[in-house]
Image 1 (cartoon, one colour):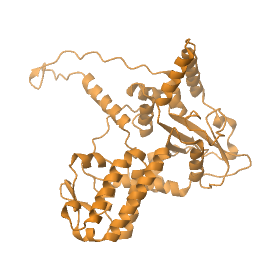
Image 2 (cartoon, rainbow, N blue to C red):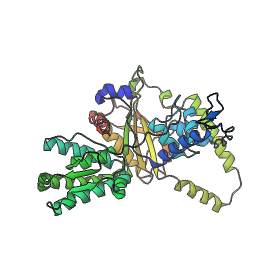
Image 3 (cartoon, rainbow, N blue to C red):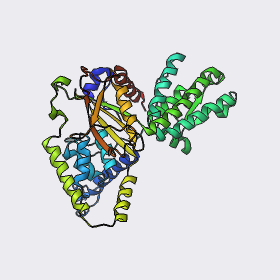
Image 4 (cartoon, rainbow, N blue to C red):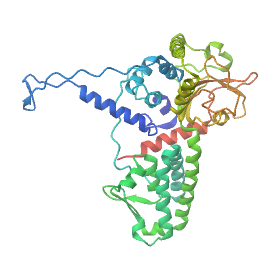
Amino acid sequence: REAALARRGCGGGGGSKPSAVAKAAATQDRIAASKEMAAPPRNFGGGTVGGAPAPGPAPAAAPAPAVSDESVAVCVEMGFDAASARTALAASGGDVEAAISLLASGAIGPDISPAAPPPAAEVLRVDVPADSGARLAAAHEAASLLAADGAAAAPALGLLSKLVANVLGAPAEPKYRKVRLSNPKIAAALGASPAAHALLQLCGFRLAEGGDFAELAEAEAADTGALEECAALLAQAEEWATHAEAGPSDVRVFFAPDGAAAARPADLGDDFYRLTADDAREMVAAASARREREGVLQTRAAREAEAARRRRRYRKASVRVRLPDGTMLQATFAVSSPVGRLLSWVEESLREPGVAFELAVPRGAPLSDPTATIEAAQLAPAALLSFKLAAGEEMAPPFLAQRLLDEMCSRRALKQAAVT
């Protein structure tokens, strides 16, 4: 997928990093810690390690958490293979949301073991264009990328807005033009987000040697026109973040593997929209487990309480749309968002937005009620939808709009531009 993305003009090496997902990061840290604790002591033949007596046998590892077939089926419906799904669920203690985050980030996959994330960079630098127009365009791109994180972007956007507003209110005041990045509150607000650090610098705050401070030059502080443009952009980004919380956010595009032939819509048979044998077996096993649970006698109040508890588990839904040419379009939505928002997003992402289409879960009916919520449509916490052109419609690959592909490349380039 990375190679295919690079050939589409993204350039650079390395996979794109996911948006920060606290739960997934915590899960990966726990995996790394457990690996260190479970690793056997090293003995290089001398009976000692570092001059101390060799430790005794390592204690037995704790039993792996049970992984339910229903949880595996949820991941399989997202397009991940069953083996990787079980590995991710075991690594996340059975938490479906955390497992999907690990799978979507590429931390776990075929022949890939869970690994701890790389340490966060203390200071992130970007090349700031000398031209004011180019700098504003770069700031717009960074603000868009940051706002895509939704509510998680609020602290950084709020801090940046306050910094710019302070300078606008008192351009000659030195204390407003200098920011100590090691300040706990400022460090917590900016985090390790490349977009947040890029936006700080694109607003005029240049990193000092060593990266402990960021300072706005006196001449740039006097340029109220440029600062007012930054303030307006930050205010707009806060609105974008509010909308991104409802979705779509964290939009990604996955391309078909190398050598995979792109199917034409006219050549697609009904089997394209059906589950594979392995998928079907996983779903049958999940349905059997569900029937077994539901077979336990419960009062109506107990059943309603259980249903409410399950609904409270998920705030977000990760939705993948599989296009006929093998491309995958992915985004995150709030479970309270209407299905119509999902349909509109897919339509706007197409190369020909006016074309009629259907979205349906494998072997399921197409989504037909745009007023129903993502949760009511049973798309949470994750769902894989098949895209199908309506009868009489024709459209040749590529299906996605070029602007969307260019945006994906620009976002990846911005992430790669941030260096320590």
